Image (cartoon, rainbow, N blue to C red; front, side):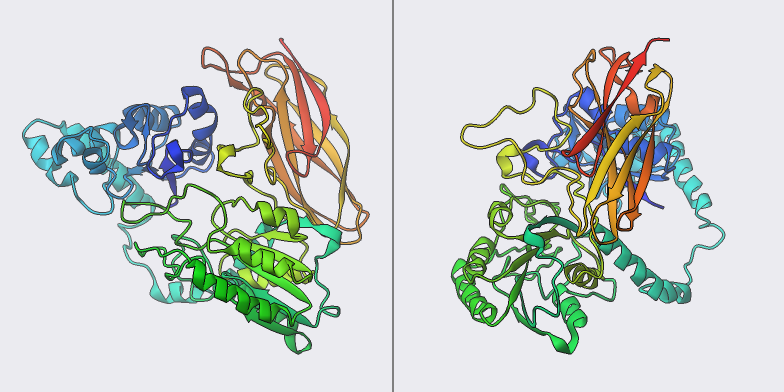
Length: 550
């Protein structure tokens, strides 16, 4: 079963630190933080939900009956099993201090709606004794047991509790799965910048390529990924693509961490500046021999990970590149050769130097086991990138929280700097170009419960076949409560041949136009809606929709 986690308001904690309080308003919680969970339950029919470590308005999620029962089960109709995050019940005692004993923690967790304690029994072991003593109603235990039994029946565990090892061995890392991993990596790669059309690289033009950087030779999968049994690094992918006609040189350049990028290990030793200075000079010697430089930078599994305990650190107070990576970039640029940066990381980094001075930048996040092959396909033009940023990339931590759906009063200009991000939400270039035209609404005036369709023509105006993610945003121009400057209400990935035009259509109705009014009722208010369509959240073409009271 898929598990929706972490429920809820876990993604924007105080200070940006794991387990930090979710200091979000009730309206913000309902409008934004609960929305994906509601979709997972009501549309995806998810059968398992995991409670979050954090607190909301002073109430830790593992003891939040309103969240776990009233909203999840009553409002949304969730019938599956609700599990704790690891040690989440016991943390009611030792982290949140809302329970004084294991019995008290077990009681409030069970009565609030948690069915299963993970990863093992730490507080639930005395539930039977508490029932016998009258401290807990047997009905609460019956409810939890029923929820667990139901999903066991649904998954067939009573008919056959075992897996087929031969079938598991057959499909694990199978050619079909490798192709799916490659497809996912292809579609995720995002072209952030491509000055003077440096990319794709022409193998007939560049006979010596230097692949340099701390993330070039290793496969980085991120946390919770386990070991798929196969992995192609970017260095290996480039070597496989170039063959005998091109010489591929390599140097590590610097280390992000002196310790191995082991996600599970508690100890993290950041890159040593003195040692990195020597490594950078070695990289300079290698790069001098090349005609073009590919820098593979970013983070690793020790610098971007879940900080699950005081001794297992993972949070950071800045988003700058660690391990002298900016120094490495400066030395490579000083050689006067074409430079491409390929980023592998688990979160957006404030890459100000790179964004300003490096002519071509690709964002990969963690690309999975076939990432090196996908990266090489993009670098050499065998695949035209069409990925889009699923998050805003800030210039620095001072801009946080940074997101596209800001309220009108959210950000006035800073002294001496700007509120504009490095790269906006939805951003992503291509080796071809696209033109948006003829944005229109099929019915320009509808009732508050009505529906209409919005369409736009998208033309490939370049010379290459390409993929584009068409994005639909709306803005309620005047409303009873403040509304964001724009809100994503649909997106569609299309493929266009050179010169080809496609009309992309979206539906707009109550689900897309409604919001919570001053009385916290979901309504569609009469008025004018701005409809915006484009390839990112900034470069948009517009139409208008009028909603009237009928």
